[in-house]
Length: 331
Ligand SMILES: Nc1ncnc2c1ncn2[C@@H]1O[C@H](COP(=O)(O)OP(=O)(O)OP(=O)(O)O)[C@@H](O)[C@H]1O
Ligand SMILES: [Mg+2]
Picture (spheres, rainbow, N blue to C red):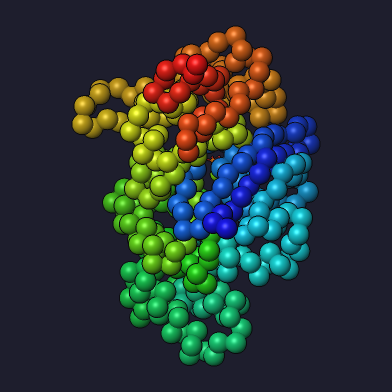
């Protein structure tokens, strides 16, 4: 079996005093062994909720998985794993990186102690000097001299701190890395370096990657497949080359591409998508994107669009019912 992660029809709701927030509304998403998938969508679309659900780190009491399965290596972690199983899996099987490195690092311990702690937890039989050797290896791997392991987080630049977070996340060679906006807090040149490094490590360690980002440019650099999420639904999913090199795509994705500055053709103004995502406490009965869609038809307001497949490329939009790839009508 080649699938490492299979999320099937996942529904997650957050409950606040006044409202039910429907954050994920039937998400299905697979990641193969060694595959890198980009997950792209606007703020509030549900990206972090997918990653937290997969780590089983959704906040207690306020979040509810009302339906769906998350299979890791064929086992449903929502039903068939205990909290102790999950603790052992986190770091070893799946690991998560957040966008703010300081939230992941402890200011009062040296970075070497923090990398070593993770290694020690997952490999309790290792002796002290063996752990130290692994710490040195991880530091060098992310491009920081091992001598600096005795320094504290505040002694490193933002980009270096994020590299250390990545070293911690990869220290036990997880099979799946969930990277939630890992480079958003960094400036553009450092961002490129960190992405390049993640790419190299991923190939060296054969890690599968779910890369969460607002930025389609970042996806193009790192991923072979991209899933677009809107109001808690995957509305498009397919190989990067199918989605980046054509305009045969969901109107929302077209809008996302319209908001990337085009440096070659020097388009003076960006055309961001007008309007806002629907209120997650009160989602429309039809297509969630209809309100903002330039191609809105009657059916878009009354029926949820189904998934339409064009080989490995899925588009969830009424416009694509009965279409063949290239835009011609099915007979
Ligand atoms: N702990 C929480 N309590 C209540 N609502 C929440 C909580 N966490 C997330 N939400 C809501 O769930 C929805 C999805 O949020 P999520 O954080 O998954 O979005 P996101 O795509 O990661 O956004 P961003 O790009 O801003 O990080 C949003 O409407 C958000 O307000
Ligand atoms: Mg988020």
